[in-house]
Length: 63
Image (cartoon, rainbow, N blue to C red; front, side, top):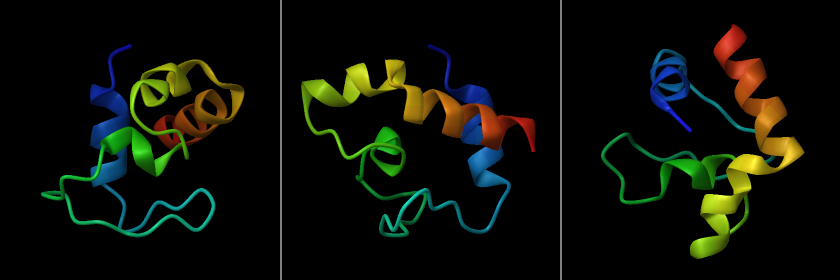
């Protein structure tokens, strides 16, 4: 999945928070997808296919 549109949209807003994730700087080592899912490690790559992540990504990119 190409995340370039999502990354561009996220960088254009001051704060994105789906459900009380920590706010991190753009140069953080925190995984980008970690802001949209509570999954860790290999499971995080599968989070792209979850309904919650898909709906959040769609909502952010459409703004």
